[in-house]
Image (cartoon, rainbow, N blue to C red):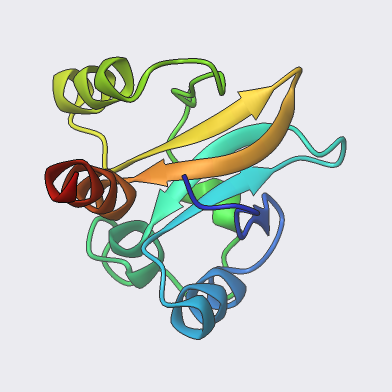
Length: 120
């Protein structure tokens, strides 16, 4: 799991999401509401407009985010999280504890964890 997760506000312009992804070299951003709750998830396809051709960078992130959010609690075993991601074709899972985002589990995190296990 990557923590802290880089996030974006639902009302932020798509240009802000693009900037955050580029600066942090990430592919997924949890989308937060005014109460710091995860309300969506955007990936690079969403913000770059490959799913919604011609979306202006001034459009709000909320216009392209995926909802409802599938998330896991921190105590969920890695194997179960992998199954959730595979079954639902997800590239990332926010990790939420008591309605607060504590991190994000991505495909890259899983590959790194499996590689560490192989070295043992």
